[in-house]
Image (cartoon, rainbow, N blue to C red; front, top):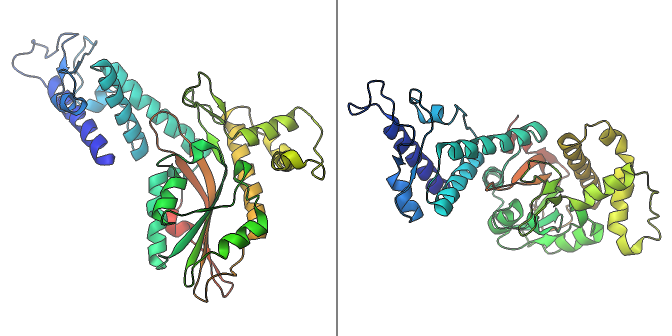
Length: 363
């Protein structure tokens, strides 16, 4: 995808810069007329549409660079670049053209999304980048016979093509996965579930655990919400985590887990979120609180996972890789992001090697 979108964006940049370049045919001030079309032949063929153009409305001196035309917004995030490129292509395909203001808005929007993610989830990256970094580490350990298990929320937006769950299944698990998770990505299958999974690991093979809650970002850039296809409003994501927090904020009584058999997972979340309300109440409403909720939910899942893990599988050389973090369901044309929070390998001799710095560096 990067090759196509990069070519489109760079072609757009080059076409625009050429269109604005001063020439002997321009006025004495080298200023183009306010609505003169700027032709983009490469994008014409890319979209398969009639000749496309966009117009400028400035009557002042033309910008000297494409970046200046687009208000000087820099872009240093590959996912933001791809998202803005796809948004621009979509507008051209739908409308038969695009204005400089619309291009500017696409870039501004993509940069704003990334700014919110970086502020609330330091170290988060696109899912494809996470995959490549993890694979490099696995190659160092010659871990090429892996059975994958995932403890992620069953929400369908966590299992779409190109999500980290999908990428790991295809590129680490060889197309196979054992599911440990329930609501909010908590490994509710417990010790029995992990025991069943690890018993399936091949002789000489290795185990890889991915555990993560999720959080959405809506088209209005609100964390804790997601704009689902076919709906005219954003809904909660993760709905279970948000619902548990709302239950506690309203001062409702804590459920009795001994009798809550029909909705045990949700009631467990309410109990655990209730213990963490002091940290949540200390946060400002909105994105800050929702990001903290995702971190607290991650810890709930990680704590339960620790009670379930074992290296009692495979043979003497078999290893257990464990990665946890927060899955971020992104808006617009973005691929989903993932914030890695821990990554380690456990060996049969009881040693544990922290792989986080090796895979993801520092931020």
